[in-house]
View 1 (tube, rainbow, N blue to C red):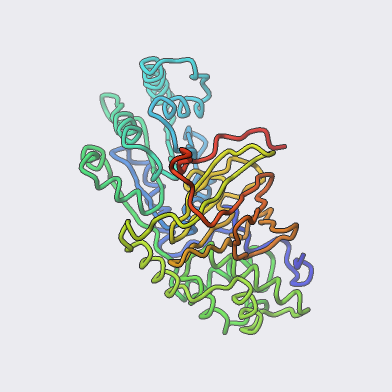
View 2: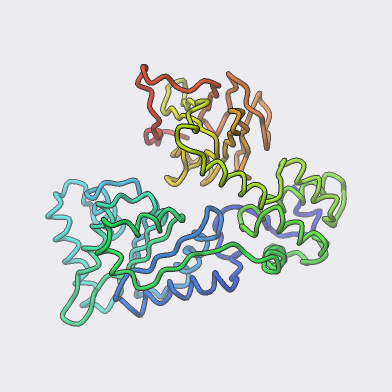
Length: 406
């Protein structure tokens, strides 16, 4: 790898949410302060939203790392749950074995636990990530839990975080009562151009490098133009640029190496990409008919089938993906399939740990042809140009939970 070449101690642009690498921009610092306020105030929810890759999970992990020991924490990341499953998951986080309890028992146990923690002067905090996937019924359970109180104050602190769709869900008429409990609501925006440059320098410093000795300052405006200041995209581009410079035995990334990385990723400027995405999103539903399909299998058994329409289709381990694959060999956001208005699809690696394999070779980007099989960890993803036939009852579904990977 390029660590010795650039005199680095660790990889500076990994996608994993490592608190040590958190860059507190003005916006991120404000969001973190809102999270911290939940420790002192119990009069409502705190809601944090942001685009994929904006740094929500890293912010949460940093916040949790700094919390005092007198705070009891339940962190829920798997959010495709029924109300009963949600209560069970919550109690399991607190150390109970609740999976044979009925709902009334779950609620009574949780109430007693919260009052006991309050009596022992311990604070209780629940953090729900990827909350855009929560059903309205589960959100209503959260609202009811937030009402548990003593004669003096409420005893449960709640932070919910998610993608921008969470805002649309919270603003619906069905959740008016919950919205009345929201005390603070904040949206994480992208980094500015100046912050993008400082973000790159910060991660290089943390990794043991000399910031401006590795990336030439002239590259920062280009990095911003192609990433829009989205931290995950910055990481992907900068990591690729370091590999490009390493391959050419150069110790500084200039605009030339950055250009090679952009060409390898086959990116266009971020503004053009988001404009195209908005055009696809605004296309009338009848014009966004399925134009292709993906069939996911494990050891020869089909575990999921999905249809492709023009737009972006994200594949990864967590429930916020369009196709969620629960496997330790699959990264949080592993790959994406971009389908154009003409029906052609391209699969791109999102700087995952294990990559995507086509024809026995690891690739960063591959234009899909009918019959192509892409390896993602131990799973196989077959691409078909035609959409799945409704007559075969092959509806779009998420894969069954898979726990046998080893």
